[in-house]
Image (cartoon, rainbow, N blue to C red):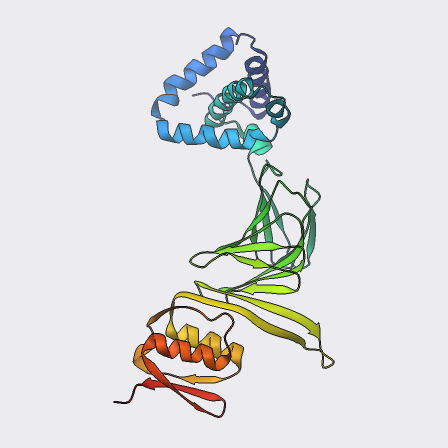
Length: 318
């Protein structure tokens, strides 16, 4: 099938679009092009793929036609947008690069050696730290403001009571209505530092965590692990005082649970080597160091012995 040049594609898109929206008849030549497409391209396209493509087009177009939808004529809006969607799916198939770049291609921002400040359409400001990458859909901001982040960034989100702002990161997401926070991603370790407002952090396999100002969410680099840490004022020595507020594991190997406990409680825990891969599900929120280690021993069917600042988990004596 003959392919149009770029300028022909652009002109054809808007001519056909205008006719569909206004209800005008499509010209004989335009009908020929569409019929030619059906014969040479459309017959080979999967119906399921076409339906999914149409839904993606509708979602992307919704933002641009929101005033018509809010005007109360929802049925007319849907009919017209479905017509437009069908036209655009058609044009994408015959080489509509212009349409794709205009409405669907995502904007990608990259900070290389220096940090980069991004200003989004809703007024939010994102500071990408070196090496970070932010991806934003053309439809942003829509009913839900969603962006995708690789690396580290500081977010100052414009407030909205009805349009949540969601950052999709590597294996977790952060949802806010308007606040200032920082996301850090280093290998498997993920953290969210909250400076203002409130955020909800979701990660696979663990409950949603809700942060208040001066709190941090982290997984300590362990899958299915979640913790909230209170970040206090900086001490005279230049170190920040922190307090572990909550700590949960869901089906996590014992050796990884022990590593997290040792790192946060500044202690040493000895345990039977044969139990290192046993999966642990436990919530250690609110307990003291001794109480939490006792709870772990109970889950394992072991007893605890303490000597100075070290704990030993061993089989119960007969």
